[in-house]
Image 1: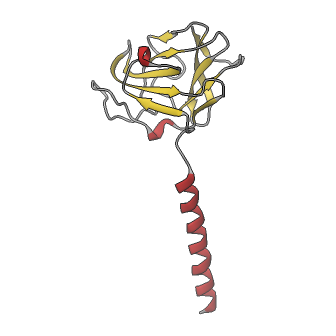
Image 2: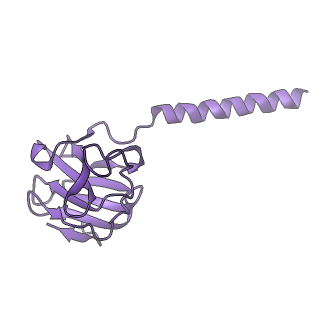
Image 3: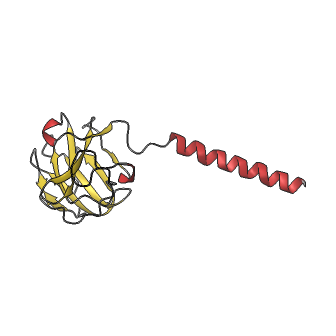
Length: 161
């Protein structure tokens, strides 16, 4: 009887730890916001992911409000396409076909990654203020995370800019 009670207490404590960790976790940094406006509406660095090739269908803006620090969205599965159009309400992760960005400086960039956690093949937007990808290359319908940087980084990405 004592071992069953001990097992129940241990299981309850483990479950409390998991619930506590989930409650404090956030899908992105506090300075990352999303919206349904266009890249022209960005007042800082942003990336607009579109459901269809050629900047068509529903889209979502991922906006970095602190451009001086590297930050991103570790896992896009918590976001959906927000604007009206084909794909609205569809999960953002692994469903974007094209993108537009707004980059503040020549050394700044935003990178879309194939895998969650900023890993795997990537597409990088940099060099010009408004780099675009009519169709994503390495992350076409396989986009899982996004990272904003304000320093030059040499990556083995397809470069748009």
